[in-house]
Length: 496
Image (cartoon, rainbow, N blue to C red; front, side, top):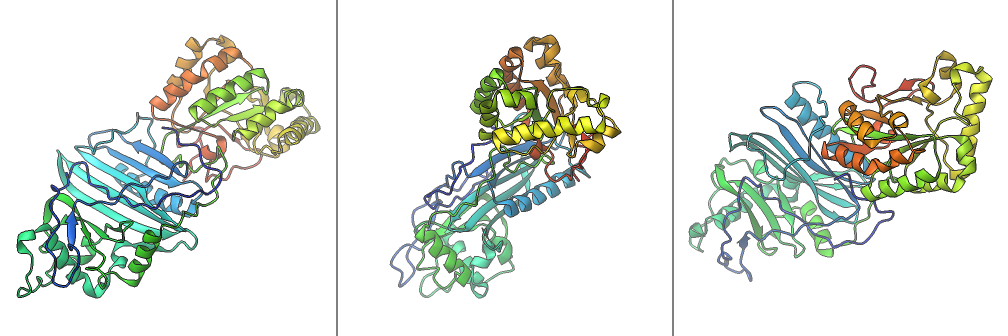
């Protein structure tokens, strides 16, 4: 999917937490509540009682990417719209994994969407938001390595971040470090009910099992129960045949939980509405084109009546694009220009009257560019950050005069020439690559008629369709310099 439309303001959501059970590791069968410890008023543990999934409709941006080859890598993850620091940290971690798997620099590939199941051979990564209350966000990150259907590696981590301060708390910090042995004994008792200690049989003593490694996926339910997902036997440290979630009652874990854990437990129980960060503007949501295959749809020569038709198509597909508008047409159709900006698309400069800028004096170039800028700003309130020289004609004089980056293209649809989607659609699909800028014209009815099909084909091939600010995010574009695509292909600009 491209991404859900971002919300425009924070909203109230019920607080919930999710426990992810690996698809290749079926949960252990549900067992009855375990016996009471002396003095407790409720069963100490229940196996299989997992907190329920959170729904952050409109606040999260869902992403997926994968590589091909004998040992592929796939990843699905969630950004929180507007949480720049959290999103950037996630990007860095994902890029590190993909770079390591590539043996160098990861190059995004245009591949169809990832299947939901784990790879039978390769590395699968899953990240999702599992908690959102007040300023606190919980994230679960699972990385699974499979070899011929056998799991040979697993990282399963839940971390909590205060978006107002950037402070990150890992799962182990929720537990009193002096009582991890006690917790381990409770967990061992829960998964092995026949070994339940009696008043005359003390709990098993701590072994050499790694307590820190044991406590990587700790959460709380809305009732304040302590939830721990286990992949290893808490008594011996040996790998379990299946992952299992143990939920311990609050009374039994009162002393085991650390002050940080108690604060989080209280926040979960209270269930305060999530204080969502201010969302990025439409068409500017965080998408990292170093991780995923991006392509930018750009439309020249409007605005006009065809532009209005195109806006409806883009809205239906939840796609944001870039419109290079002529100042003369903006003056003639100011309401259409305003509608483009209001819909969240990027508006850029395509001169006042579409001349060959290379045939003009420096003063003439400035007049053409400035005239269009003034018309666009008056109609939309937007000051365009890019210019596209008509016909792609540019030289040193143009570069020195335009005052903003020049955006050309690496995929010329030639839609103006064929005026037939049966001709320009296959052409685009044969030329497009990750990081491409696609040239189209919203003055032709035939072009607009082909856009729904084009978008469907591009998405089906694995492309995220982005605006120019999203495509070139993180790259310092220089005034006057020319750019036609992002990436390491000849003529493109690399982001890192």
